[in-house]
Image (tube, rainbow, N blue to C red; front, side, top):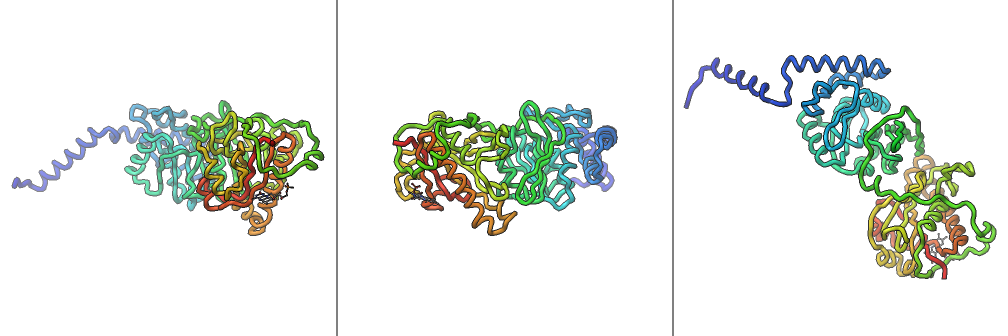
Length: 443
Ligand SMILES: Cc1cc2nc3c(=O)[nH]c(=O)nc-3n(C[C@H](O)[C@H](O)[C@H](O)COP(=O)(O)O)c2cc1C
């Protein structure tokens, strides 16, 4: 065995250490490191503090997190400049001031569980990790999710959990979150994110297509309040949920039948022709069930009343035979007057079975489904909200559908009798399904 003197060994170690530092791509030399630290200080002073960001913990975090390590090495010298930078895969790292502004708007105190949509480079997650207890972050581009996960782990961030997936859906299992920050722009606030925001929590999100607004949403007593902050420009949110939206025709406000006549003639109809329904017809019926008066025509916000205006139900449409729609399950988003594609499938046989072969689904062209969100009413009204108000609300909505059906020559029947568990499995939306309205042309 070769023996070295202790001093020779130390010398070898030192040479090896410096050789590694010189050869390593990602470790800046001392001079470069000092320059980058200085640039970071300048960034805080002239871009962040000068524009009014005051949160001391945030300023400290942004001074600590080495932003340059989150961009390609060729861009290190620009990492602290006042603009966003490309990070590959068509994505960007946001301008430092926007990171600061969005983070400050979350008003973090240190104990929160925060959800970030759009991990990107991982920089925003690293800043958040210095300011709250746990950060859950989702990235839809697999290569970016893998890279940021690796980088954050190497940098020792133990409270950041990176997931690869569609941010539209949030992270149901880890919910609720005291803070949600979205770093890509959806055209509207995804409902799952609203649902996953904790009572008293804050969501910071850019919303819009060509023109985007940075918004802060807060949840109080189950209700979401929205405030616009500044116009912004983010990469669009992608994914099948956001992209899989079907714009519905505007509701028609004048029909051929008076309300009185519709009430007089209304009956439950359990057998239909085999004709299809059109998208215009189903959209008119969904609007009757709980649409939003987008034009503010009546001044009322939705077509059906609801205790406290909470609307503790989500409306889904199962298309069996709708002209413009693929067979399958869709979620109705009243605020946007859209259908969001959930899954493609021919569900008729299974639904006939789980409704105890009652018959009305054999020929129905579509079905409206009431899926409950009891947490909304329970937060405000306790058990009374769940056992009374929620079900009164869907009664009002279903009666609207009955009347609208009558005026369109369409038949429906309220169906409350079915196998709850089996229906839950067939639709698989993770919510309590309590009421069904099959729809079909009258014979
Ligand atoms: C809460 C509720 C649940 C119902 N469930 C069923 C059902 O499972 N199957 C069915 O054939 N009819 C069902 N109906 C329809 C009633 O049987 C029907 O409304 C009643 O007989 C009155 O008839 P009409 O609607 O034609 O006036 C239900 C109605 C309500 C309000």
